[in-house]
Each structure stands twice: as structure tokens, then as C-alpha cells.
Image 1 (cartoon, rainbow, N blue to C red):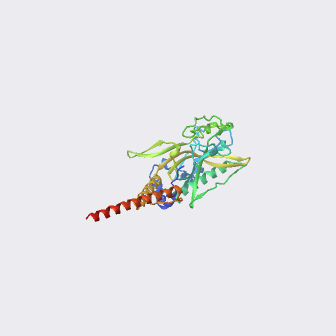
Image 2: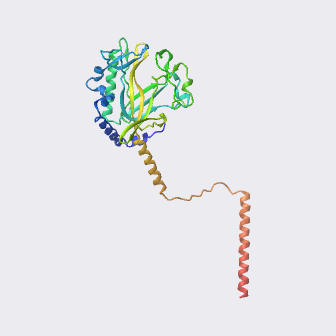
Image 3: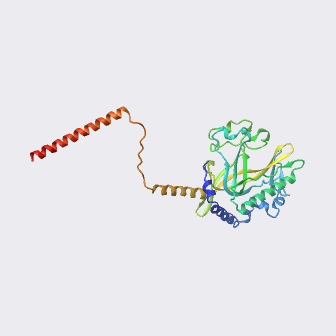
Length: 327
């Protein structure tokens, strides 16, 4: 995957301010749009008030859902939240080598890691995730929920989201099998893996936001268009999966990733072009390089050239003498 991270981290303060302006624009949106943010779960104990945990399948996984309506307790809506940041870590399709799936292909994931470059608004995402973690912890009895392990990059915390490529046969339930796009699996490597299926629950969607006639539109894109350094938005859900007989782990599950802008990429390209223009204005030198040894053939050729030059000089001198005598 192409990377613009050197330019991003080389101008960290500039792009931190750019992200802060984006968060300021979210604050001007409708309350419904603001409630979609992962940070909402950190406000006024919203995670406990608005959500609960259900096992939507017969397997041991549990999912975060909104409290169902008393009128229809079977109508359940899964919690889908949004988070934004710079893409600094990624393992995304397309898959060109089987080795990229690791030693356990059925457990292979696509994942992204986002950084806020120190923005306070991004840090609230981490608080929201911690609140969701506590909700799951309250619903797990007789078992423990592993603590969230945060990683940092250039001094800033990262948020990771992932989704497995496959659902194991034993966990299929009523999940719909989905054809694997050639944009994801151009060589059929995923399709050849046995023991699981690619379902709608494993599918990740890829988008790019564009401004058209003063209105934001969203276009579906190929995953290879996504670059490290892009400002992106992810849509995610939340599940816990068993990691042992009495242990669970919280998974912020990646459902979609959208390029919000290519500011870092465009700036990096402009800087590269400027550097090339500067270097082309320097003087051009004609450099000679003499390597090797004089061979016998070259020595003979050099002697012949010297002899011919001497003959020509003698003939020129004789002609000059004859001319001066006639005068």
C-alpha cells in the first residue's frame, strides 16, 4: 500500500489543525448526525442508558444493540457508530499472496488503525470505547473481558477496527453468503480457503466523499484506492468473541471505510514536484569517465594515427618550403 505517512508526520501540527477543523464542522451538524459519533457513548453515561448486549447468534459472540422498544422487543437495531482520523496502519485488500493471510487463513482479518495526531476530540473516541467495554463487562457473568490494549504512534493513541474475512461453518446460522468481489480477491485466493464462508457479516464497504455542486456525495471505490495518510471515516459495530473457556475480547468491527479527503496525499505530491523542479534548475555537468586498460589493438591504432599525422605535417612543411623558394 502506498504511504504518505512521512509527509503527514513531517507536518504533524498542520494536519492536526486540519482534523480539528473537521471535528468543529461535525459540531454544527444535526443532533441525529452527532449521535452517530463513537464519542457520544462517553457523554452522560450514554452507553449504559441507550444500549444493551444481546447474543444475536447461537454461538458465544455478543453484540451491542440499542434498547429494543417495549412495543416490539424482538425488533433489534445493532449499534453502528462513526469515527474519523488519519489512516496510519492498514491491512486491506486486494489479496495477491496466500502468505498475506498468515498461518491461519480462517482467522485472517482486514484492519485499519486511526490516529488523531493528539486531537482532544479523537481522544473522546477512546473514552467512548471504554464506556462500551464496561457495558459488555456488566453482561458477562462467570467470565472475564480482556482489557483494551491501546497502541501509540508518534506519541498519539491509535484506534483499531477489524473484520474477519470468513465466518466459520459452525457460526453460519442464517447469515447470507456473499460473493467475494474481484476487487478484494482478484486471484481467487480467499475463495480457495476451506472451512468457512464469506458472508454479509464479513463484508467491508469502501467509499470516498466528494463535493459536487455544494453537496457531499459518496462514491463506492476499490479498496486499493485507500492510502496511508488519508483522512478517513469508519463505520463500526461492536462484538465480543471468546478467546478461551472463560475469557472474551471486545472487537470494534470494521463495516466500512470512507476517504474524507486527500489533503495529505495532494500536499505530498505537490512537495515532490516542487523538489524535482528545484533540482532541474541546477547546472547540468558533462561528466567523462575513463575506465579500463589500453589493449594491444588500441596501441597499434594509436601508433597508426600518430604516423599519419606526422606524414601530413611533413607534406604541409614541404609545400610551404616550395612556395617560399618560388617567390
